[in-house]
Image (tube, rainbow, N blue to C red):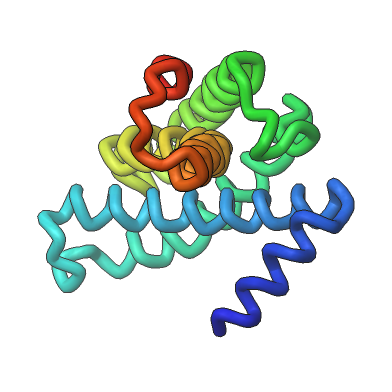
Length: 174
């Protein structure tokens, strides 16, 4: 398994932007699915048996739909063009705008769903928590690689310099 992860890392580093975009898109899908599952579990006090079967069915319909719409919105906001090592304030602003659009689309879906079905397919609290958790997770997904890379670069520098008391490096890291 470790070799497979190394190969994936090598493919990522040596590959084209398409490989990088695919990897981050898959991570976005996983994050969205986990975020909505966490929202459902939190809503029902972490008791899976209490969740009504209709809600489980709704989860199976809503999460793939939200994931696909999110991928399209992220693509429109060019969030798969500057990936991981170039995450910046511009990308953060685009993420906030993209999740604002997704929030409005989610609100529209809840209103239309309530009017058509006469009841909500998914509780409002699950929508709010799921969107919030997914927004935090997908945003962190873009910046965590850069943070880890920044920290490990600093560790490598400190290993080569030793603990010689180089205060300029410490100031650079802070």
